[in-house]
Image (cartoon, rainbow, N blue to C red; front, side, top):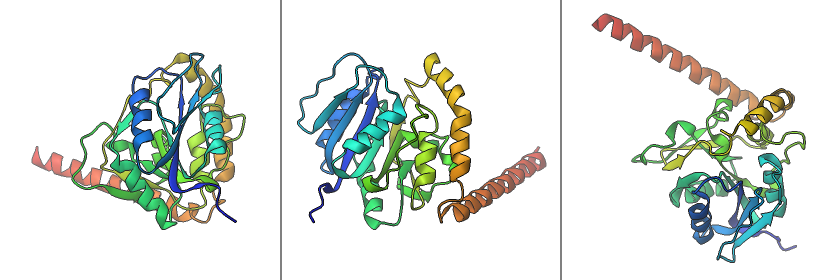
Length: 251
């Protein structure tokens, strides 16, 4: 049976409230990318949106359905083999999608995200990958996530804003990666600084933690990756202690 999805091409999913000026150049850039089959813009604002490209689809909601339901809607509507879930307030070079596509083709990895410690910095000489640990989620992981469409696990309906990236990260059937060194600029985030969203986040925090706790340990890769995260933290602690000792000795 023929695969109904555009093979090895992205459906880019971008929820928006139209609060960031980065939205328009981002959509136009993605629509022109050779690896992008379509750009699905989930318009959570009451004002209509229009783009010239035929590969851009606008899903007007006429009210704010919030980010996690928007991700679910975009994934359900997608026609590409791969998803690229991207915030509306970011800017990056085309090579970032190309790099993510290379990792998805290998079939070894789940979500390909961005390492938040490298955002808003010049492009490094070399782009690298690192196995993503759970601590990456709180560091802009959800601002750029590429994955196979058929591995997307719909986020529970009672999580509207918070915890969606935790859910997707832990639900992934394979270990996740972060990209380091690519140019990736963001406002972090024009929407989530809004007081309305902060109130929602506080209300959803307990539910999201409960879902995350239930998911931990349910995938074969969880235990080794969590052990790797512990080892990394121990190494950082040793290096920090050594640095302090050298500083004291030099004073």
